[in-house]
Length: 121
Image (cartoon, rainbow, N blue to C red; front, side, top):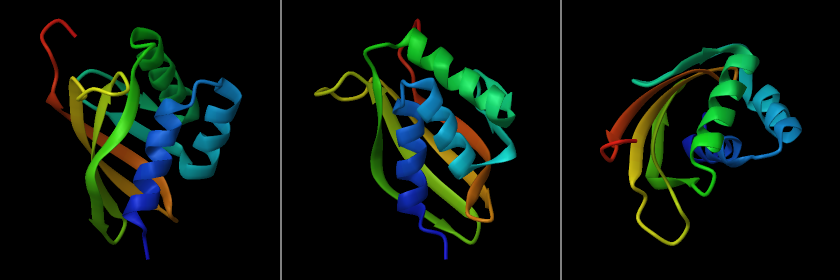
């Protein structure tokens, strides 16, 4: 049985990990080697592609962190969860919802939707 809360928390942990070596460990533990990520602004394939996306977001928003919003849910090999990106202690100015497809309990693909993005971001 897939635990959507655990999947979503590990995903958020990955996006918040600043140390590249540790981020790479999290990727290989929780994502398939041929995993893909796509949202309206970016896409990447495999460990290298996903890692580069995460590093780029961290570079663009160095003081921001991801956090879960609400309760992740799912069925079978599908997980849905919402997240916020922003500074600690305030309502996240950037929000989205991601859909994960799993394979063997690991993320095979992510399709992301941006629910709230301030102008100029």
